[in-house]
Length: 299
Ligand code: COA
Ligand code: MG
Picture 1 (cartoon, rainbow, N blue to C red):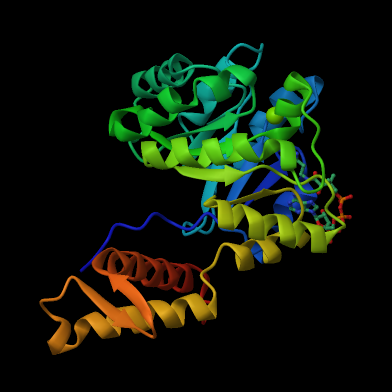
Picture 2: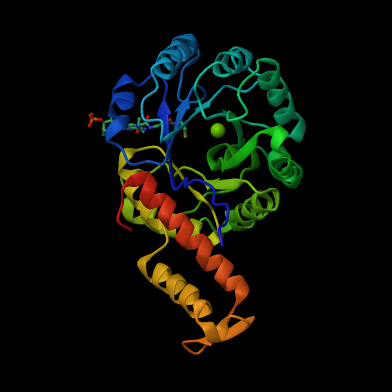
């Protein structure tokens, strides 16, 4: 049985569009996706130059296999409209909209892309980083059910959310848990990916790995990262583990036995296994195969 498996977005690296050194480093990095940032990482006086830099990058876009998206400035800012108009003509896989608040904000950007005849493969991503976006999240994520709306992925933006709500970001993120889980729930309901926020402390990789592990356990699709050192831990946390893969193979193997062909539920290693677990196991194996194909990993 084959299942549609979305492309891996385990590690999604922010790169300031003005940072030539960082851009030059990209071919060596193992992130699944790159987000070129035109927004917060770029000063107002450099916005136009940053846009020109990306136009050049996409004109000679390398490595077709890796996903490249662009975070534009808010359409409510002085630069957003020019950013979106430019990006609609680039060979980018997506446009990340910051500080959206309602489904309408997404639909407006979608209209611009449609009018510019941007290809259907150009998707919309949205930052969930304002109180209103969080309150409207179910309706925003529901747009994922309509292919014409282009919505593909949501990103938690905790730095802005903390700024606008006053919530404290503690190392264990205890006060954020309800919001983080709500994000995963809404994104899954809408059939789109949900990426965890960046972690600012890029030198403390032990804490970072733990945070990635928790995000994976919460159901996030992957982690947004800001520094090359964070890519490895994110890829590891959001890849199926060797044990999980072995278990998935055992489930597939058990249901493939002739004596189980007409059984809905079986016993395996002292545990009840249902056909829904078979579907889950097949999805995990398909995802692992896709990761291996994309990265050349042996995992
Ligand atoms: N993408 C690609 N390469 C990066 C990178 C990134 N996001 N961040 C750092 N690097 C490169 C550096 O250029 C450096 O390259 P080198 O080995 O050729 O010299 C190497 O990785 C080591 O970098 P380091 O010196 O440890 O960090 P830094 O002081 O150069 O940069 C930051 C630290 C935080 C300024 C930088 O990581 C960054 O700008 N991150 C993205 C921030 C961003 O986009 N924020 C907006 C969204 S939240
Ligand atoms: Mg932000």
